[in-house]
Length: 260
Image 1 (cartoon, rainbow, N blue to C red):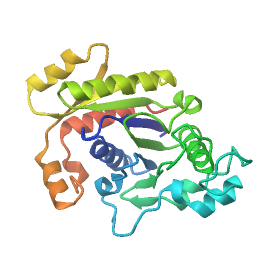
Image 2: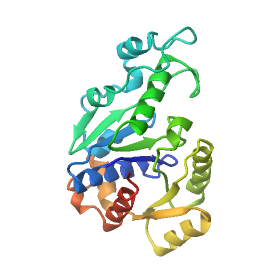
Image 3: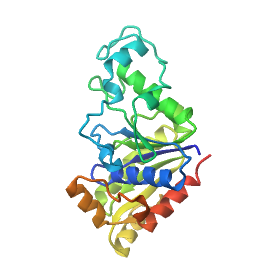
Image 4: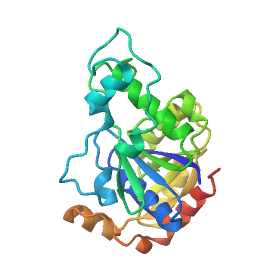
């Protein structure tokens, strides 16, 4: 199965939890499918949702200084000068990911200086790695993005099967969704859908529908006590992934149908 999904949304809407649950659900539904979950949010916490032990620090790819220098020919933190713009990255997902229950986690990290559009060794590695993950890997790649889609570019956009914008009932997440959709459209992502999260009532469902005309709505996920409790206890929600709500299973099956 080859499936490439980007998941975005404003901070606090639950996109990281949704990313982890969808990744785990796909891995559980098809044991032969390889699933890579990409933490591309500067505030990296996808590990917790996947149940990966965080007592051992996970070094983001952007902070692998020796590797970046070896592959690009320039020291991280340098600007200008000459360095390789197409570094070797195909071994990075397997060498630097951590696996749990059929899902490999790869933490991208972020470039600390120069802005998101800077041309520097770190950004070159990240862009090359994202291109490789989306274009060359014949597997499921699920990306937990920051509010925008900064790690994606025009070269990769055509191979993204869906940009899923997670929203809660309310105006603020709708405004964020509009911005994320525009960013996605600007780089050429064709399939941009909305996923309503923390929906407590039919009124909440209708509010999302009424406030987001023109959006394709993938589905709705109810407010779940299990997630609140697991967050409080520092554990992953639904340790037995088969116990997730039917709504989330149905959404995952819809996404699997997008695979090529």
